[in-house]
Amino acid sequence: MSQGATTVTTFGDRLGEAFVERGQLCVGIDPHSWLLGDWGLADSAVGAESFGRTVVAAAAGRAGIVKPQVAFFERFGSAGYVALERVLADARDAGLLVIGDVKRGDLGTSVEAYADAWLTPGSPLEVDAITVTPFMGVGSLQRPIDIALQHGKGLFLLAATSNPEAAAVQQALVAGGPNAGLTVARAVLDDIGRRNAETVSVATPPFGSLGVVLGATLDLAEFGIDVAAAPKTRRTPVLAPGFGHQGGNIMDLISIYGEYAEGVIVSESRSVLSHGPDRLAAAIERRVSEVGAVRG
Image 1 (tube, one colour):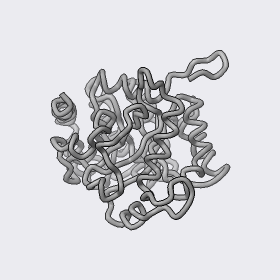
Image 2 (cartoon, one colour; image 1 turned 90 degrees about the vertical axis):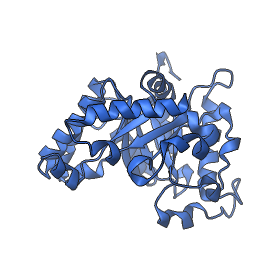
Image 3 (cartoon, helix red, strand yellow; image 1 turned 135 degrees about the horizontal axis):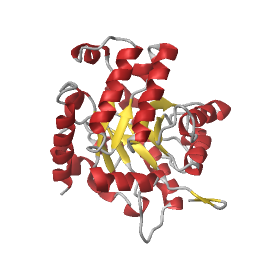
Image 4 (cartoon, helix red, strand yellow; image 1 turned 135 degrees about the vertical axis):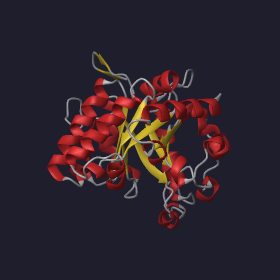
């Protein structure tokens, strides 16, 4: 996209490049207290920093995408954020695409400030994309959408998540407006698809910079989503948690996601991280190969 005389490489373009160069695996950076213990690290900001930087070093040159879960750093307060900033700096230096799993959602200037913190170039917390919560309406996220597109960043909106408590909300029908009669999950997906269609070339469609979160352990038809009818010209990327430890089988990638499969980011954390620091690089390399074999 163009901003005056400046050309900004879109997040969708960089995502496509990462897929070509390193495949579709995304390695989570989740320093659970029990994982820190298993790794022989202190349950502290220092331990979380060591953990995160080790994951980045193991992923560099093997996977193309990492996803730090910021809650596991935030629990240590300001020291945790310093640790996270160092992990993010390492990931940027390594050329990894970074998705900040922040799940922010708010209104007006508040949600704009969240976007400024995570998506502004030069910010200590700068990442390539963040997860956001659209359940106050996708329109409530307009400023983060604008900021993301301005700076060549991305957003992933929660649409159909794996936790059972979410189904009552995400499978509910929208009462009015242009999405009346659709499930909430389908309405979020369609809204993002329309927005991507406005910014993605139909002739040679790259990925859009706006994506959705669709859990790998779900029957998406129950959420009103027909994966066989995904419009390719919209090329909506999908962040897909649930593979590995949570029970999703990578061999089912295409049957789960259908026409969306080419844009699925296969997100795995515990199933890879549990191999420990000494075997982590080999585990990542093996998993990248396994995911690539499914896509052919």
